[in-house]
Length: 258
Image (cartoon, rainbow, N blue to C red; front, side, top):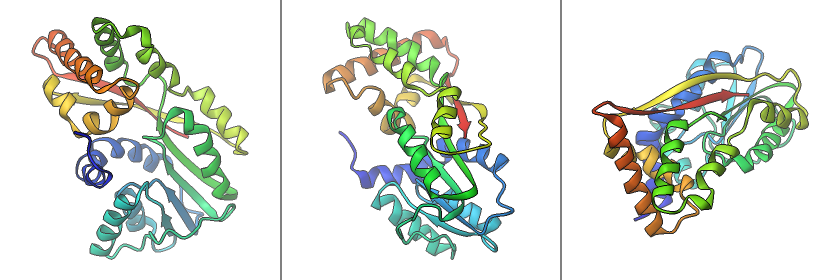
């Protein structure tokens, strides 16, 4: 049974922020310099953990504003912020173009076909000379899963749909993202990358993990009907078990920071 947006918001806060989002924010923290910033806007702040961490570190001199992906994540972020007296502004004021010294944007769950528009919108908020940091998964991610997913689709006579091929082809390359950035008006563009691994003891743990079950698989298999999704997921777990040979299963993600 599919979960409500409210349920997904709590799952995002309890599980996905730690398992997934922190892999991206760690790279941003490593390279982001806020020493010359007086204000910052955080786009797609999730349930607010990273925005509040930045407030603890820089909040004495940087005013931090944040938007969340939906009202349920916003409510969680506000409650967390109130509990620790965070100064992050979650008031959802309208963010005007050319208003911020720094912009951080989480594109880790943004659809690849929506990424160029997302980069444009984030870039528009920065003042001339401002700093922009956008993090996202790039080409080369999920290879271990996608190769088995193709086998599962083939076994279920669904390979002609081109599902796995489309997933691989859609992931943005560094050169594509650089082109997006330059078209949006950014200068001094660079991309930092790291390879992060997600490891599971069994195939069951993999397919039932909140990250995979609630956030990744629904997107990967969205073109299939419910029966097809069940068949492919069952075949995928069987293939993982056959390949694992009592070893853990893991997949890698190329974490990129623009």
